[in-house]
Length: 245
View (spheres, rainbow, N blue to C red):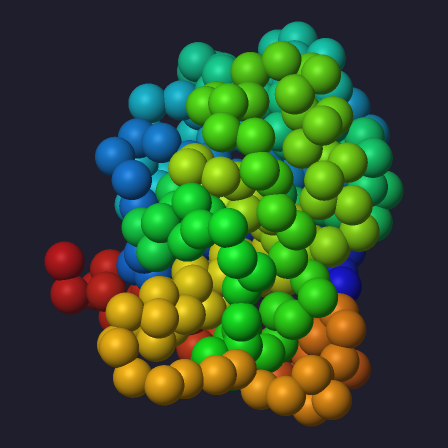
């Protein structure tokens, strides 16, 4: 799994503020899709999870745009409509006590790649890092609207950081906001690179199997400085963008 210093010690208001920023970071990195997609944060008091309210695009999310639901979808706090795919979050949180944050989005290249009956190859460094950390949900059933479907997705994800959902999009998770967000960015970049190589009509290949380590994202966890540097870069990118608006 991805590693970064836990957001412990932060008040829930501060954590939700960072979660809103993560939505906007994802919007700048290929994950905006009208008002579709959502991130969630496990409630630190064990009540359930905070989910972006329905009706907003990633680029529009502010700290006031989150609603607290329990793991059966009941509304506990905050105001706004519930996303119909809330079972994605509830069932992954139920099955993965190590997960604190979940992303579900529909980036163009990852969604296109999800239709391919082939595993993701390490064409670029992002793909190498994700080697062995991506699952494949092959059921093209549209939205995940029931708890049974959510459990099925969670079982497919298993202990991995990401799952590509056929003809749908991607779901990523992690122990921190940064971890889940970086995983989503990396999946989109890796799928983009794989599709470009496959479409080039040139001979191509990924790294040799002996050069890859199963669960490659775990290698990044060994160096929190690298993860911290990456997260700081994307935070600065967002700050520059919003300053220039």
